Length: 498
Image (cartoon, rainbow, N blue to C red; front, side, top):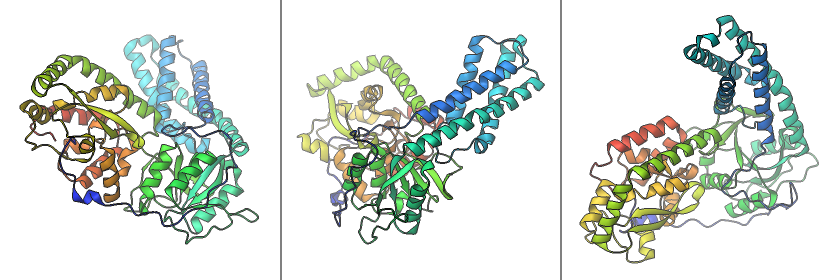
């Protein structure tokens, strides 16, 4: 919804404050000699998740074997397994934790098993009364499967802890003061958590806080005081985990630090909980984990829920493909109108910033021809440009100029719903001027979003847009996407545009 021309706001000319000091670089010793290739993708150990998945399937199989009921068709059993795995994945029972416990998972397993078997019994009764399950058998199935799940998950958790102690993952501790030092000492003294600290990041990016030994006899950790050195340490040490002992948004460059770690695929934790009023990435679970007595909240930035994100991506691809087929005549008519009105060059291509600040080329129907590439990249809005033709003005007012972005969605550059993508020049400016703007890139960018349906497009407040975008990310669900798509479809031909 931003466009090809018009002056940028004067406030956007502010420059970033240079780093205050240089840093101590972390050593290359540690996990592996392999070069890290994790930028933009999440590298995780899948073994714990597969062990738990196998334990759940085994528990369900044993439950079906002892259930006194007529043998069910294989298709019904396959549906049972699928429903169980989806419910457990949605509840986060396959996420790696710091201190997993089958007893702590018991309430969640019991509730999900109740839902699974009640839904299955109702569906079977409606399908064929011969397969109906009596209430005593239903209670027996729920109790048996819950107990078997706990029993099968216990050795899976113990195996994961032993493996983590033998092959610890490199970690960074973010923070200063006694809490950061105590967390570092806990990681050194308790290898069963599977984390080996290789450096500490001072979130104030100053050298006032000198490194201290994390444990008697242990060498002090190097202190990193610039974002560049944090990125270098992540790559050199193959860092996969980061523990924040202070809320990411409570410091000047905390959001930029969180975004950098997310781009490298680090799993992130907030120790002791969020501070009131500060920007905090979404917590993956209401019940925190713990690290030697410290509450540890797992953080994610939109893509950390693999099952939900896969469902979002599937919905985007299907709807975009159907929309492209249905709108093919309209696309052809718009292209012909642009060609006849404004000459060659029907499609306008422009670099935008997507998820994890990765650039991509956005496609639109051309409504005006910019003077040069610099003007296209650094000028703001053209809603009142006199050089715009009638066709261009009509396309912009009806948002038909954005139909080619369906191809971006099909390719995976964008989503149907998400924060609106912006050009790199303005991303740099707005990230320095508006708190929380950089956090918008935790999720895939979209054609429409919560800010757009509230009228925040064109020459409107950037701060309010960032607020709505972050609100969408923190409360994201597939149903919210459906509602926003419905609201966008209802206002598709409402006069507006940008």
